[in-house]
Length: 111
Image 1 (spheres, rainbow, N blue to C red):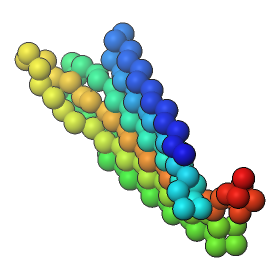
Image 2 (cartoon, rainbow, N blue to C red; image 1 turned 120 degrees about the vertical axis):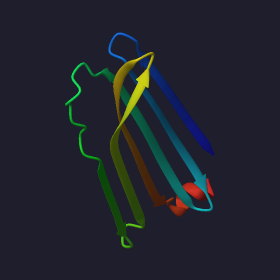
Image 3 (cartoon, rainbow, N blue to C red; image 1 turned 180 degrees about the horizontal axis):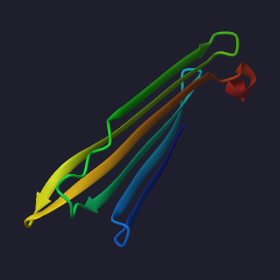
């Protein structure tokens, strides 16, 4: 069994785009749930001395053999300068990935 959900939201007035997807897969007694999320925001820079935010990386991995689950989470934040038509823009972005693995109970598999 595979369930997919995909969202794409664009806001022209706020110059922001959000893309998100979720996937649930049952395979060989393991249910995997994967969530992906990507956001970017575009800001025009008027002053030349504006500093970029520092990049950011966060990773978390958790394993519980008693409950038969594994979790993984990763978040990345960063920024890029872009010049378009002589104007300077700062693009801020954030990407996150969440993976959850769990054993499917045997009584559910037999039905």
